[in-house]
Amino acid sequence: MKRSSLLALVSLIALAGGACRQDMHDQPKAKPQSKSGFFVDGRTGRLPVEGTVARGELRADDHLYRGKVDGVFATTFPFKIDAALMERGRERYAIYCTPCHGATGLGNGMVIQRGFKVPATSHHIERLRNAPVGYWFDVITNGFGVMFGYASQIPVNDRWAIIAYVRALQLSRNATAEDVPAAEREALLSGRKALPGEGAHAAPPAGGGGHNAPAGDAKPQAESAPKSPETKH
Ligand code: HEC
Image 1 (cartoon, rainbow, N blue to C red):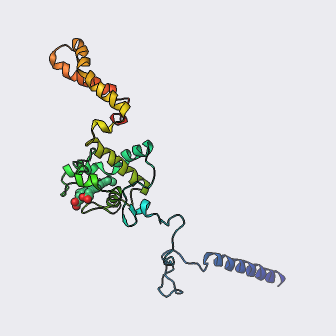
Image 2 (cartoon, rainbow, N blue to C red; image 1 turned 90 degrees about the horizontal axis):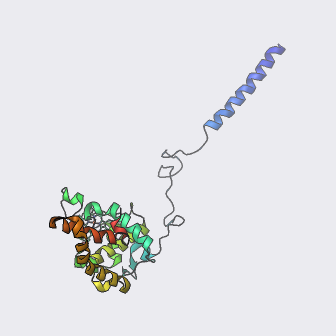
């Protein structure tokens, strides 16, 4: 008799312990996407209160986030443009824009060559050269016509970097010697004058007249390579 009451006690404790364990398993919690009998709309997942802004995502700066100043497209960049940012823009442009607009911005990228129905507008037409940078920001952000927007793929600062690079691309097709800083203009112009002389020196080892031209062409390229990062890969 004593023995059996001890057994009963032990099994009672075990039972109580077991029940406790079940409690831990079935907590009164809401699982993602599960139904709720508590909220009127039957959803456990709650939407944030209207007007909620996540920390660091206020985006109140119209110039930076929308390319607008006083409601019109900005004609200035929202931050300082330096060489590092231009380089970033060149790299991002190559990734996101060249497939359609081409490396030089003429609109003859591979996607267009392979049959995209609408041509990608050249970046060098007068309207787009004169368009404010804010307009460019808007096109990249929201898309234009059949071109889709890149808001979800290109972060804000990179969009501006791309625009800075496009401005350089545009200038590269419309610049005069006067646009080159005085010191470099001198080198540029004297460099050009030196070409025929250089070619004459290259002539003897090159041999026939047919080889003369390529030898003459190769020389200035080799000379300008260290100055221009764009010719490197
Ligand atoms: C998938 C191909 C494609 C890519 C990638 C692309 N574009 Fe375009 N883009 C187009 C096409 C096509 C048009 C012409 C749209 C139309 O007229 O309906 C266009 C038009 C434009 C225009 C002209 C808007 C106007 O006012 O006429 C600008 C500016 C532009 N793109 C900039 C960019 C920049 C900058 C990038 C890179 C961030 C880019 N695009 C990437 C296809 C592309």
